[in-house]
Length: 253
Image (tube, rainbow, N blue to C red; front, side, top):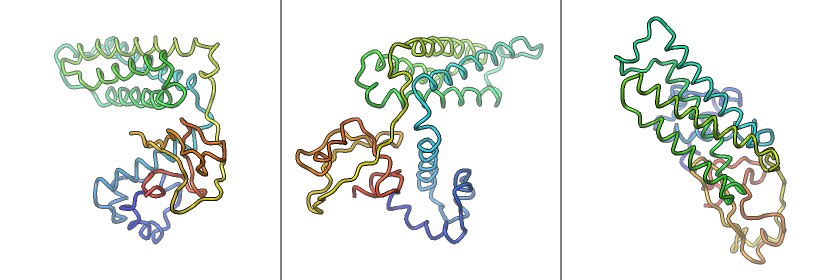
């Protein structure tokens, strides 16, 4: 993890915080552990989210399953809006305040969209024009969800439009059954690098993405990474020396 977080390790060890507790840790609990800076709390919580994604979804999820999940979220939100409007107490034309359960459904939809976008932002999808266009469309639709400011009724109409469009995109991705990439999950492989010269490094060029991925963009000719013949552009670094990487600063710095 980042160097700025090393100071807190002894606090976690003293309180015997195990993996299950870490999985559900909150801002308040982090503060009680001495992590008082909001920025440091966010780094830890983001790292936990990344660990969850790596351990629970990496080898089971694929573009089809993530499209199904987003499709389900979009249709659930459509049904939620339709059900509200059938209620005898509906006041959407006068109110500008969305109920909490409505906002929760929108957050769930955006979360499902982000998971699909993270997959589309990976190699090889990022270099395929059709998938890049689909990704851009999803991003634009999510932005529409976050910039709506009008009456509840008008907001619902805009969200219904977004949901229907997202469902159409998901149906299109799911229909691409002839494309093996749609149903292909990630594959983990252990690579051992040898003959490493401390002054020359591993010979990997790495780009860290906004959502915590560490993607290899290339290797230096005749470097340990190049000579092993198993590391290619688009590969992701998951672990180094059996430790899951949640910050490149810890092992590249």
